[in-house]
Length: 388
Ligand code: NZQ
Ligand code: ZN
Image 1: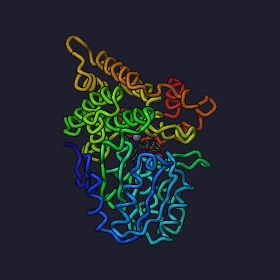
Image 2 (image 1 turned 135 degrees about the vertical axis):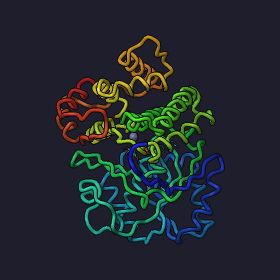
Image 3 (image 1 turned 180 degrees about the horizontal axis):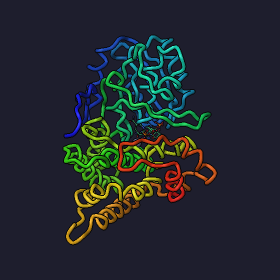
Image 4 (image 1 turned 45 degrees about the horizontal axis):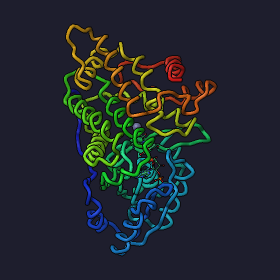
């Protein structure tokens, strides 16, 4: 393992069909004032809202509701939540929903007691919180982002056409997360497969860096194999508990800092995808699927050995008599055919991107240097063109 690191993850996970039974014990660790954050109504339809309200009442909590957290949560919504949390002297933010609700709740947790503009501080200046942080707990209903066990919080500023993620430290991670795979059964197919690709992409962003022999890469390969296997089952039968539970667990471990250990990590598909998101407000996972193949083809030669290993170890391609470049190419073809099989968006056009957006999207793409190749502005434009 290269590098030196300290490893800990403060989020306690409760997993399985009866995971919600643990909520009561978790709530006992906090004061009376709970802010319940949720999205556009899926939890009311499924009945989860009623179950949670009844647990909160049984535990004698005062509940402040903050509904309407949209996909790709906005800065305006963050201001609203921060104000509400402070006014109600909130002891715990309970996020019930997907990555957007979890991310949003973390952003509120560090903004409620900050007197300045949280957008400037946390997302433009990338500073760490110095104010009081309200603890967050999650009940996850949609799988993909890993937000249930990480410090990530992605907020969109439509006026500035920027979508930016801040990866906060241990003090902002959810204190606990409740993971019941059955909650994900009602996620619409489009969102479900977008989440599957998001998971694959998170793993690849970490796997596609470095050339040492690193345990993190072996774990990454195992996670990808499990995802491919279970996703094929889940797209045909979304109610297959075994498949959905494997995917839920894989998603969590794909982005909870474990497989980033000893890695420089890439994250350029996310940087381009997020900028696409700022211009289109498209579903996160689909912004990644639309640009990823063009990106991987751009960096393939710079990371040839790793792409060849990906082909053999993840897709089971027989290496006999093949050059690294043939293998790398076959690996990307296998990835593409899996993407088509599960049904993710393969082009930016489908997300509403037009050529006049290219300059702006490229400008809003933060260039990171941990992967196999450092992109130029022109290469980003070229990737966007080839992704149409
Ligand atoms: O709002 P509701 O009505 O709940 O509907 C949601 C939403 O429309 C629906 N949904 C969720 N659970 C459901 C369900 N519908 C039926 N049944 C259920 N059980 O699904 C839609 C999408 O939800 P959302 O939370 O937006 O999706 P996702 O989990 O993909 O989160 C996306 C956000 O996470 C950020 C993205 O940028 C995006 O803003 N990310 C966060 C990361 C992190 N924290 O580390 C990393 C990721 O790379 C990502 O950037
Ligand atoms: Zn992602």
